[in-house]
Length: 337
Image 1 (spheres, rainbow, N blue to C red):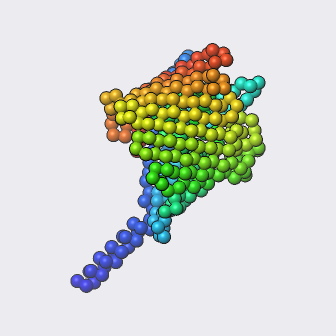
Image 2: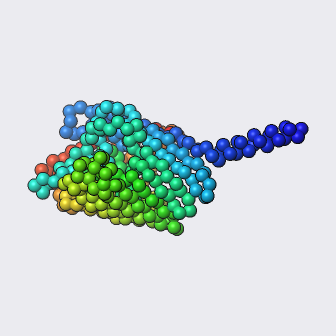
Image 3: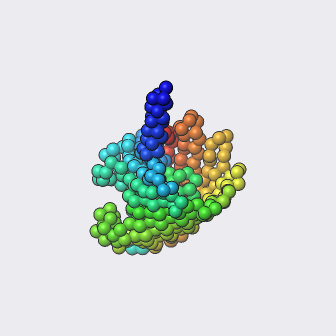
């Protein structure tokens, strides 16, 4: 009997140690499949990623003692369109020529890294959190909550107007995230010069980023800054800053963002979303104050099965100089797991 009790106690101790020492790992992902049509094209396309970027990832956390945890996140994108160009907001590039801004959102990636979206590890505790490795830019992290449609890849109003509400396109390799001080949070990011030379271009330089956010009940406010990551003319060659705010009245949520990404890349985004029969229905309007280009976005999305959301997106881009209009339509389903 005594030996049995000792054996049970030993097994319990081993189990407790394993649960404490081994990281709790979560496999997660998102798959976006949609049909889309652009007014300037003859044919529609059955593609994914027209609203969100399909991805799969691993994340985990482990108690390492001293009141601290070790954390990691490894995430890969483009899981359904390997070898094909994908339209995304984060890879947008802009060039300045004759005082006109030319933007393109089509990116053909040659990067062979398996975890091309997130690949970081760090420590967290009462001091906050530190991370090292590939992460979303601080500007993106600070402002994504102020886009009512989650920065839809194909129809985001701000993107269509040439207003970079989510940052200047730079990356973050080192980051500090403060504890939550009664709704107030601070984030600091850094990218060394050598990394920007390797990841941006040969004229890369050290870049810095900061974000401050405050959430109290239905009110949310934020301000963010990113320094230029290169001396090359274009979006990543400019300092970027933004201020954002939102208020949720219950019957409607209002958002507003003003972003300054340099000459030709300044403007605002306003939006409202309302709940309708379990769906979120809304509109966002953006205007570039330098070029007078505008973007309009109409959207509706609803979770109709557990983890399965259907969406309808419409975007209209108006080029003030040429008077040209481009309409974009997307109908799709997102499955999160």
